[in-house]
Length: 74
Image (cartoon, rainbow, N blue to C red; front, side):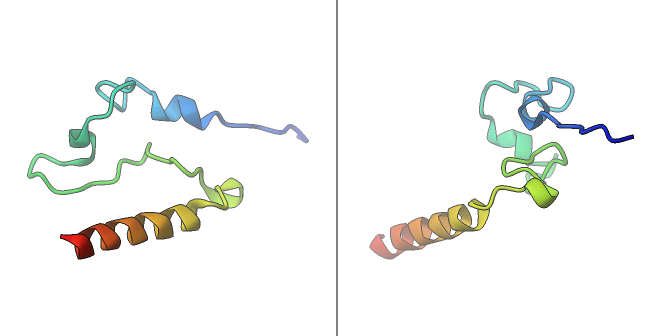
């Protein structure tokens, strides 16, 4: 009782039991056998719950604006 538990989310993102090559980016980590997008449970780039990154929404808006501007140019 009264113990604070702090999780290390960077270890989850580099867990070899979840990711085939955790230190390299491979798009197939996010695709199933049919090539459809899946979000692995171990993928928490912005954390979760009360300790979630307050900049997540800003990052998502920035990505949306970046890609819509890119599409408008082509």
